[in-house]
Image (cartoon, rainbow, N blue to C red; front, side):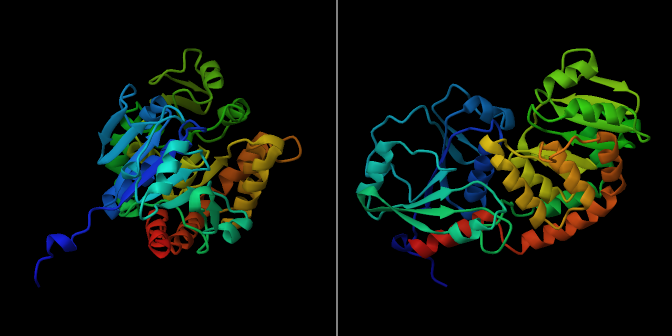
Length: 389
C-alpha cells in the first residue's frame, strides 16, 4: 500500500463546544466527558468554552481558574467571559455545539455565516425520556444569515442520540468490581474502615431540598449497619447537624446503625469508582444520573427542580421507561423528589426499597444492555455530522 500524499491527509476535524454552567457540576460534567471522548476516541480537535471555571475545577483539578486559555487532556479550554468578542471565519470550528440552548456570542455566529464551508451547528439538548424527544431529535431549524441549526437529543432509545459512554468504561468497571482489594484501597483512602466495608455502602449526591434529615433518622434505626459517603458541600446543614461538627472532607460520625463520612470532591474517574463501589447511589442532575446507569447498581435520581414542577414529568417519564425499577424504587424516587402527592413514611419506604435492592441490581444489568444497543452519544453525534455536512 502506498502512503498517503500530503494532499490526501486531511487536518483533524475541529469542534467548539459552548457550555454555560447552570447546575454546578452536571452541565460541565457532561461537556467535559464529551469533549475528552471526542478528542481521544475520534481525533477531533476540541475547544471547550466554559463560563464557570471554579465549578469546572471541582471535577477536574488541573483547571486553572484564572487562565483564559489552557490545554487539558488534549482539549483546549477557553474561559467564556461574556457575549462580547470579534471573531473571524478562521476562528470558527467545523462543528459548533451549544449545550442546552445556551446563546453563542453574536460575533461568533456572524463569523459562522462568513465561513466556507459553513459549520455544522448543533444544539445538544438535555436528557429526557419523554416521548416527544424522539420526534424532535435531529430536526433542523433555519437560522438567520442562511445558517441551519440541528437539535441533537441524548436519550434512552435508538431514535435518540444515546448516552455518553467512553470506550472501555464497562470493562474497567467490571474489573474494579471484581477486585475486592481495589475497592478496599479506593474507599480506604477516605477513611472507610474494614467494618464499614462490610456494611451497606451508600453514596449521597443531591440538591438542598432533598429530605436527607428524615432519611438519616431512618437509617440510624435501621436493623442493618449503613455507611453513607457524602461529597463536601452536599446537604451541608443536615450533615453538619448529624456530625456535630463542620461538614468538611474527612469528618465522620456514627449514630446508631449509621455512619456518615464526608468525602472531598474527586475527579470524574474517581467518582465513577465511588458509584461502582457502593451498593446504592443517590445521584442528581444529569451527569451523575448517567454515570449511575453505567455503574449497574441501584440508584435514586434527584432531578434538577423546575418551575411548576415540570421536572416531575421528566422523572415519571424515566421511571416508566427504565426496566431497572420495582414498585418500591418508584415510590421512593417519587417521595425523594417531592412528587409522591402525599406524606412519605420514610421508615416504610426504606424497608421496602432495601428488601428489593438485589432485584433492582439484577434489573440494572438488563437496562444496561438495552442502553448499549443504542450506541454511545459521541459516536452517534459524529455519524450524524457526516450525514449533514
